[in-house]
Image (cartoon, rainbow, N blue to C red; front, side, top):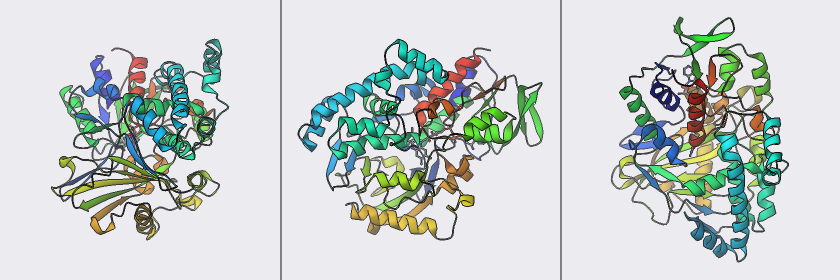
Length: 469
Ligand SMILES: Cc1cc2nc3c(=O)[nH]c(=O)nc-3n(C[C@H](O)[C@H](O)[C@H](O)COP(=O)(O)OP(=O)(O)OC[C@H]3O[C@@H](n4cnc5c(N)ncnc54)[C@H](O)[C@@H]3O)c2cc1C
């Protein structure tokens, strides 16, 4: 939708075909009894990218603290907004941490400086081009492509709690911190530098604002309109097939998951082979909790409850036989927003990382009773870690990876397309300009990656590649 708005502003006549009965995809909504839940994103960073497309149509709030944490050893700690406060807060956790944080922060900033323009904000260059650029400016040491995010954290911190704190950022890219490149420290920098933002009414408002803007720009949005093929003439994309008829176009921008685009919609065997070499990203298991009673003011808007052994989570997720994580890090979002819950109650969103729905490989999230049993387990683990909400839960709604796959067409419910596991992963991610002339890929499964800011950047990159009408 962001790309469509940019293309319309550049003078193109644009129309959108959406398979579902509403827009927004993973930026989903669940409403019941006056409760309004985001079923997808709950935290936005780099808000200027959203402002570029929706202006002031959404009201955003910068959160402080960014998140509250309960570490595996039982310590509670808040990560405040702002770097001075952060240095003091990590120092309070253990003397000496402040200096280590300052060194890590400087490194994360250098990684951001080196990578954001040539990588995140530009069409994807080849690995060799990027390597050459890095060598030219002597930044290879900063990026340390041989180092994982976990190893970068372990190099900087003697306090294992701060290692877990940094490791979790790999999951923002659906990845294993022990395999994801150190470059992902740029995510830590971006979130803390640009802030963690909430949108009043819930992040779903973003999709609503985009669709309102599309209407103002006279961009038709066809719902329940599944694209079944990308029409090519002499190897050039010339339109899409919807409901058995061809809609002609000079340019096709595909926002469906890249594996669907190259696997089913168009013939691009090399691109498909390259995509299949990459490890798919993880999925998520979501609980929407209708909670009775007023807000507990000790609880931050975002809270992360770490298990004792965070490493084990990634063995369960990415091991040879992926399984629901036995003792997962539990992320909880409890917005302080009267627009999302009736008076005297709260709308909680709980998310744990989960392997993809893969019934052929032995993980069937639709298996009878599995989702309910797992939800009970997550709620019990929350209680063990100090957040006992069960007596207040009026009802709950569960969303499994299988639901996500069904609702958004992402294979197995992968949230971020392919993962960033491995130094070459970013280069296996599909480029925005496809090998088929006239066909462009936008969104979280293509360059530069998943998560709202990167998806908004991909929209900007694609609009730039297509150019003015
Ligand atoms: C549980 C969860 C939590 C998340 N938390 C955060 C967060 O806190 N912060 C953050 O920044 N990001 C978060 N994300 C990631 C973020 O939601 C995604 O990266 C982003 O929304 C992806 O947008 P997209 O347009 O690339 O893909 P999608 O949202 O998947 O959109 C693709 C659209 O294409 C449609 N489609 C698919 N196939 C076809 C077809 N053949 N024909 C027509 N239409 C088709 C789908 O129906 C869908 O509407 C989260 C995601 C989830 C699921």
